[in-house]
Length: 302
Ligand SMILES: C[S@@+](CC[C@H](N)C(=O)[O-])C[C@H]1O[C@@H](n2cnc3c(N)ncnc32)[C@H](O)[C@@H]1O
Image: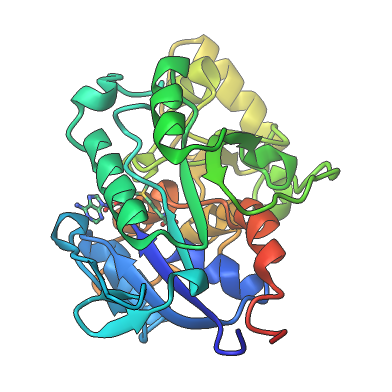
């Protein structure tokens, strides 16, 4: 065990899984990453140049060997009792904020690639994340994962209202914390809410007073309390422009909302819009840590 854990991360995004494992004190022997988004790969490679990139999940072939080990990336032979399989398959099809095509959305079907690899590797530990969805689709996923999901809202530890489902055989540490509030992650300015739907993948499209006050979504940061009061008056008068009164969260504030280190997503040739997209697609690291800290003995004791 001293060698550390072998991690196979599917739909790896910006390698939030690796960040969380490292923050949780888990020693990693090798980290395999399957991802196709150029921005996400760029951010992962900046932070973790030694990630082994596997590309498109549909092209991953795992060979089971006679001695029970598995061959990954046609190069490394791994012992399944030393493997953690993680992933958050695309959620747009299930999200209540989207068209809800559920398994009719081709992106949702990628979940079955996770299941294919789970069955091929038969890892010691597995972890799957997705959005809160209609019960019938949750039950489909549960029937394949063979464990019931734990539902957690990121707001119990962080400033975000972000409800997610986690299917895993890793123990979860219960939380009794009121969590970080929104104003604590600001670089400057004023917010009227303590917790909010801070960001999603489209957050970089900017916001307006209507989406903020009417649907409570795209979080805004006001210059000060007076600007907030003026913004309320403008909204009630039907003027929705934020110019001169408010701004959207900076990329650093968005990173903090997810528990990423400042400038984690800053990368040459990556636009601000794409930084928000990668952050909005990612995991709330402080929540993931509550699972992965229970693997921290891994690689330490023999
Ligand atoms: C919900 S996000 C997961 C983000 C990740 N958990 C993180 O913390 O950043 C889903 C990811 O799946 C990736 N993806 C979509 N199709 C894929 C495919 N065919 N193979 C590998 N990754 C894919 C997307 O680019 C996206 O980054």
